[in-house]
Length: 350
Image (cartoon, rainbow, N blue to C red; front, side, top):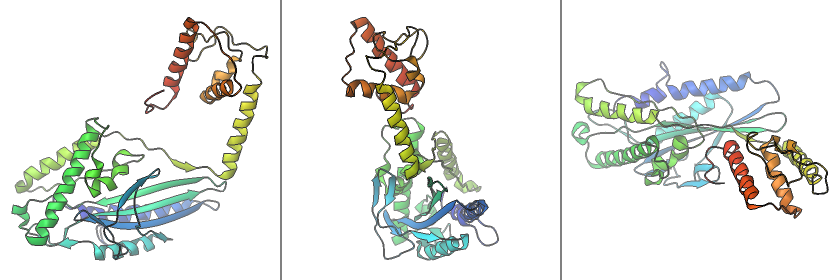
């Protein structure tokens, strides 16, 4: 939404009318407190702003110009401070500290105009009695508003801040356009510190809510229509979230043991075995016959993991498979059809 339309008020509110962030924090700790013994929660918070295309740590003002990095876990800010908390009041105290250092200025449209994009981050870890861990990150973003100089009457430093704000919002709009039109092969996340920071929130393993604010005044009709169009494009983006679960050492050892037993079982189904695959056994349906020359029982093909293990066994034991061209084509086609059906939809090649 444009400057002065109520974004920061919606996110933060005040003591009498709390905004989204305070209400969410209270809800999170309310849920945590309902869990009984045996479940361990860890909550850590960070607070940053993107000011003039620089990332600054609001909980440690000495940390300025931080770099946005990426690794196998996703996007992160290098050297950003993270503070562990025990209660919702601890979180509110951190927000109060960070707000003291957030850039604000007075313009003709807003006495307390945000001159930076703020991001409050909560990292939550849930560990059960068996050692399995679930990880979650919540990003609460309070964007600075788009503005026109002729309306804000900004000059000097305030004018330069407005230029940087509009530029980063333009980059955000370009990313939304690329995601909403299905041209996701290239999304220009790195064109701005803001969009790079929001990469996981826009197209990663996440659930995202976008709230737009509009001015009802007729003088702001153009900005209001533009904001509504932006919101409409956001609503067309399809994302799917999956739980971030880390298995315990005991669970991983059990999985390895089960797979080892399965491999040993499959190795026993070698050429010396008298068990043969029936003619009507198939990967997908009865109409797709599997080559008769492979001496394995049909129950191997009841799940996808067994198939991959079987291929590994055939290779590791140097089992020789021979059949004519017609059966070879049928063999390849059967495998391909099965994998296409059972592999994740985002698998690009087989």
